[in-house]
Image (cartoon, rainbow, N blue to C red; front, side):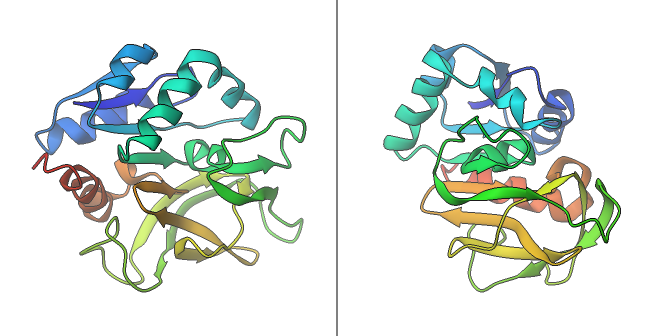
Length: 199
């Protein structure tokens, strides 16, 4: 069972609909016990980084415990940014710190938020992006961007390059919305399911 974490900051139904389309069971939940028993965990999200403050206490503990057990975790948009140390959007709030670095606002030279279709530049080998074409267009909507780091497996250019996808061991994050990105997004979610032989 895939646990889609509900912290009141996401387009949860569309993520669940994408998994249902692929034939996989998922549940939208804020119950730590359900998360503890999940085979895969998704942390979606849109909006202000402050919303991630709800990912605290027993909910955070359940996610961290799952990570320690090597349960695949996928952060989408705000969920990916939460996996970094922090965000300029809410400087006093700490992220999960799975990836080093701070998310920062787009420069004034470009329109923000960055909304719409943009190209992925896939870097080398990635289990999450397997069979996702180079230079494919995917759908973004965000005002802050994650830095390029060693774990970056795909970047995108908008007022400079930023991390569009990160991956290390069973930790995965995407800045774009796979559930809104057509066949490329479905392939990414299919790959995420296959990590635990769900397909």
